[in-house]
Length: 237
Image 1 (cartoon, rainbow, N blue to C red):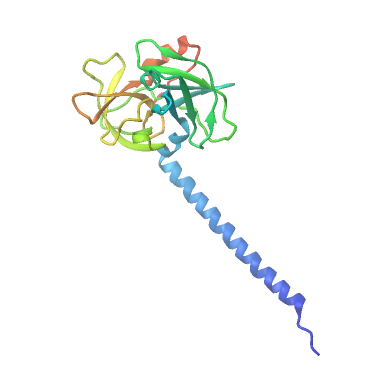
Image 2: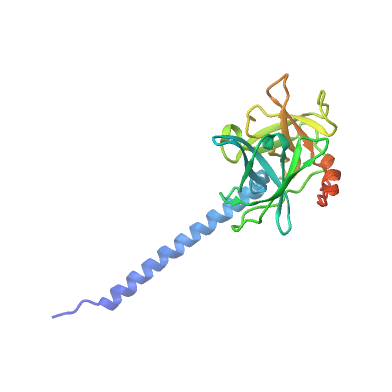
């Protein structure tokens, strides 16, 4: 009786499996490299981790939903959002892009002269958040992106374009953007340039046209943040 070469079959099988594994790892490495290149070529995608979802509970079944932008991570997170998102609320929920809920620390701090408020939260356990880097100016015809939660859809990027620095009846430091897809839930969200730098915070929609959204230039709120003890240096172009 001739015995089958079991060891040889196992060796051949092992080699085949090893080849398959090497091929899978090679394919995965190429996919990760392609993803990295895609992220590098579209830095606006990197702005999502700078944004959080904010829900203010008004009553048992009523919530104000908006967005916020992380502007400091030092012992805790400091988040800026539109003050009207928290108007009349009795509890605040903050959720990161990774789905983690963050404990709110202390009371919100409102910024005088602007529809803005600062929220402090505990640091996230799960990695995946980034602190926003503010830009100094916005240029005509610039391509912009708004990260928010329109119609309560979480972490949606809307394309926008710069319109004007003159907002009728607005406070100092406001500029207008054209954002047809922006909607309720985008308040407090960040307006970012193509380099992923923060240009402003969405505060309101202009009453005379639904395609205009007023935002506060990051530079204009820097003094208010400094008064609150928050260093928020403006990036130079």
